[in-house]
Image (cartoon, rainbow over all chains, first blue to last red; front, side, top):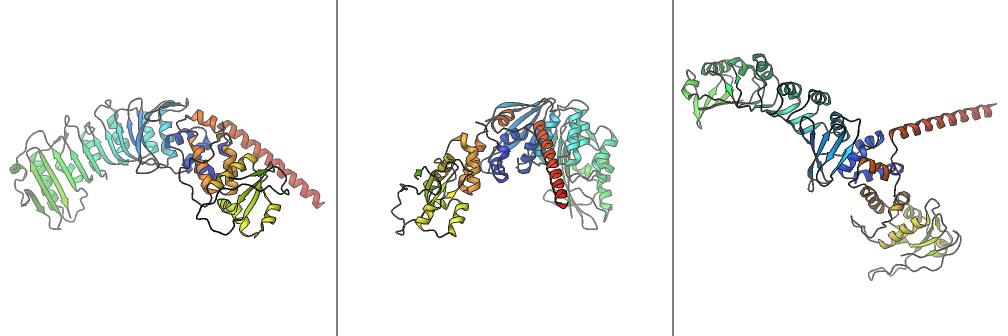
Length: 298
Length: 188
């Protein structure tokens, strides 16, 4: 029994659409340009979706439910020309002219969502990376996995990292000296290089130029001499702004505490080594055989 | 509950049977009003039941009709089908003097009439019933695909929307031209 929904008075139409489930609202938005505009005008929230990007499919986890007490995330699997729904609403919605990028843009658009909670790139195509760059969604956590094909992690990292609050990257994209200095000098919040198979070579100047607030490198190579040089140069840099709050470096080859602290004056506080600059700034050093952790205060 | 009587708006309705009053009801005799829809069937409804409708409540609050005057002047709702008005009156009687629960299972279920019911309830400004009706409309498409939703809710395609827009523009242009010509004629 059909009903002319769009002929309802505006307030009733809006209320009816408010009563719809999130998946039904997506389906409704796909009916026409007008229904898309109506869906968008509801300002429905999908609670910062999580997105996993595979080579031929994007899995989009959206929040459904009317209240925060009764919600669940359901996955939408996006392919070229169709969306597959899983969970309580199983089905396939087709739209021949839509590519993955169109679906992705459509969903972000109707929910006025510009933040993605977690964007996990398992593998993808350069064109989808371009779409992401164009849509420019902010991202709480960007994860680039180790399974990506050879060139993509690097392209993805350089295209997307500036929009992410935190980047976890499980494959080494800093294989050139130039890449390292370029990356570390960016004003990023948290970057963790998690590839333990491939090392990132550092020198004192890389650490001095570093602008990343929280930096973790799981497989770093730096000589004791360069570490000492970094510490000494940092100590001399009175009244010079230094943005990082934490640098965690992990090594394959063991280092001894004596080698790292040779010629440096410090106080020992709670098994850590405290260095104070004349301008009051402090560096707290934790050294174990396979890691050096710098905390900066003041 | 309500009673109905076939006739015109001027016809005096038969004495209806009304919903039994609760034991706690006040002793003061309840006043009744009369409404009819497109089919001219007159429904007797208590003032208490009519309070659900902001429109009718606003109308009667200023009238101060006696029973006889109310009988003689039923409210005409010519834009509402008789069976739809009957549903609304039944609902108002069932919920007289009490708020509707969020999920009211006592409400009309006739989906084929849902659209007309929404329009009527919107016109009569019965907020609680309208809320429920809108929920019912939304439930019609639960678990449906875009194609099914298009069919159930008779949603035009983009091409149809564009054609309708062109048609409306053309009509508006013609009307504007007609008005200009008429104004020019008047000026002469």
